Every structure is written in C-alpha cells, then in structure tokens.
Length: 108
Image (cartoon, rainbow, N blue to C red; front, side):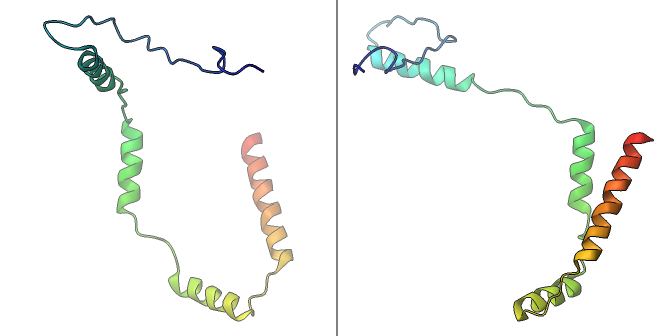
C-alpha cells in the first residue's frame, strides 16, 4: 500500500458553493471565510410539526404520572433486602395473554 494516494486522502467537495474571486483588496482567506459563513447560514433545513404531534406533546405535558409511588417504594425496599419474589407463572400468563390480544387485533 502506498501512502498519499488520492483514495487515502479524500477531499470534501462543496457543490453548493460558487466560485468567488477576491474583490478590491480582500485576500483569499477573508473571501473563503465569507463564503464559508454564507454556506453555513444556508445549511439549515425547515422542519414542521403536525397538529397531531403538537396535541400529543401538549397532552403529555399536562398529564400527571400514573405511578403508585408507595408500591414502587415497597418493591424497591424488597429488592434491596433480598425478599422480593418473582412469580414466573404469573409473568408467563401475562406474556401469553398479551400475545393473544395482539394476534386478535391483527386478525380482526
């Protein structure tokens, strides 16, 4: 492998910039800086948010959390004390019920 081949040193190409010639005493670096600043300013992309997204965002910001903090604290303390018991049968039953519900929705 040879070092310094053109494929080793890619040169970025700016297709939006137009050639600018120095005018009236401006040197090349100040002209390049002005062109770079202009291309940076025009690099933005307009984004619009739908009314549905705005409504959803407003609804989320006004909601209160549906969290039972007492239950969370009791589970947290049981885990820390090592007394929390996991019921695998209940977890399996809920997983199967959720899967069945999803299948019913796709079929119906």
